Image (cartoon, rainbow, N blue to C red; front, side, top):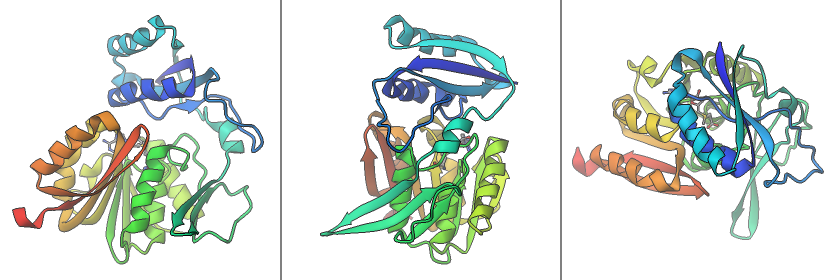
Length: 299
Ligand SMILES: C[S@@+](CC[C@H](N)C(=O)[O-])C[C@H]1O[C@@H](n2cnc3c(N)ncnc32)[C@H](O)[C@@H]1O
């Protein structure tokens, strides 16, 4: 059984509250029963119902209540908490979600890099890459800033013949991109079994093979990777950086996202402790990402 929290608030507050709940084991936050049509502009000031859940075993009632009550006392939200079976609260959105088109300005030319769409959308052949996803309960459709930040790094990195790990795969979107960019072996893991299942289904949808397992990156402790992608959250990243360090080859690249601008210093500090160089840092406010490479002068 799951503890399900419904929060009535505007989009920005929902994101901020989720940022506090994620380290307590909550999965992604999604809008319940809201279907955006192509013609409807999304009103970020509209109060809608947001839903997030945590398994009953991981639920810390006191900490959760403290977080939610702080926002409620400022009239920023109202909330309810219930025990429920896991189900696809995302269904209505999933049936209507709009494709994400990743286009970049290259001098005076627009580079149409990737379209992320569902199988019910028309194909658009002018994009260099295409990813087809049915997200169900999993995170990773390109609608969130952190996914786009991760993909942005991937487009700039050489994946040819590389061994790649997508830690915290959600839909498997980053793993699928790695395979499309020429990786010779792609592994993925997630602590939620529905995400493992979903990543395998999505890889299949894109006619690709990935080795997706249930668990943290530790499940691949006997392998070494050229590229490790981890879009999770600040606390997990800080805790697992020693593990990522172990899993990466000496020439490896680590790409991280899932943290806010205010927390970037903590991650940079940790990276320096491990002798990593910051190759690139990107931001889609308030979310950030870091691309790290091992510092050869420290070896
Ligand atoms: C923000 S989503 C990222 C999904 C996708 N990779 C993307 O970039 O859109 C984070 C995912 O990490 C998973 N997760 C959380 N803690 C984890 C851990 N310690 N190890 C592996 N996966 C974890 C969650 O279940 C969730 O699917």
